[in-house]
Image 1 (tube, rainbow, N blue to C red):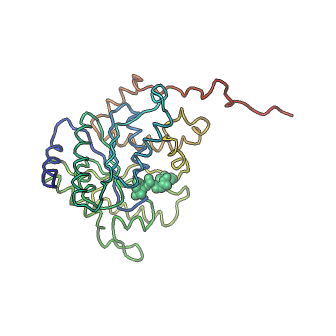
Image 2 (image 1 turned 135 degrees about the horizontal axis):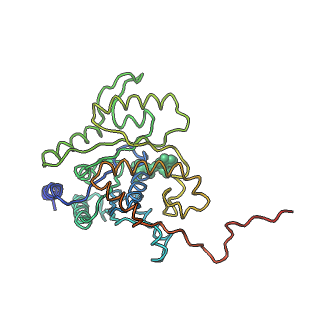
Length: 317
Ligand SMILES: Nc1ncnc2c1ncn2[C@@H]1O[C@H](COP(=O)(O)OP(=O)(O)OP(=O)(O)O)[C@@H](O)[C@H]1O
Ligand SMILES: [Mg+2]
């Protein structure tokens, strides 16, 4: 399959009436929080009672896919798995010979298969690697919503825009911003609405620094020029780093036990993020009805063993 037929397929897929809404996590700056946000957003939308598909385009690191494996391992039986929400997950795997020109075709074909198999979902959340390649470009063309996580430092800002030495003048967009604007135009050529570009400032310091304030100010100015909007931010919180190995998110309160209390501020941030995405989608009311009807009950975690030490305190001397 060459890129021509794939492009034709993507444009016809984009024009389908009943297709899922595609949310792509993208930023060519590595380590900005794409996978962390993708995981939490996807699980949050699934917890809101919606059908969610997830696609991991990062065949090399496969962070999202590793998270899914960890989650399945955490709840190995059907009964245990019923306590957690899951998404329909697809991994675009590396080709046996990555240098081979056919490797690109092979991965594009995998993406097409993934889209076909996830056609009944409300949302498809796509996690991308921090690099520019044909597969990432295809994902950006598909993005109804593009979420770019950004840490509040000049180095991270550089991934979006060039600023002069004293940060007083914006000299032009970065290669990534140009790519986003270009892909948005490609969508328009195909008859699809432009990309809705949303920035999420991630790992905000608890005490705002001068650099942080300066970056936020530049971003505000930039939002009009580049046409993006802001999502509620995430703060720097250890809990976002802690749960990966268990395959849990800060939303899995019932599983977190005593940690649930410390996870609450992080959970509120993720819930605000999920709400902001739901409000922009056609399924806000559906999610609200499901929450009201309790169609997505979150059963409490059963005790790990018949003898629980959870409430045990050492006897007073
Ligand atoms: N809000 C946060 N608080 C604390 N740690 C965070 C937060 N967001 C992300 N991290 C940590 O930052 C690191 C990078 O995050 P992540 O892997 O999600 O970024 P990425 O953009 O997907 O990276 P890559 O480009 O390599 O795919 C990880 O160690 C992650 O646990
Ligand atoms: Mg990642």
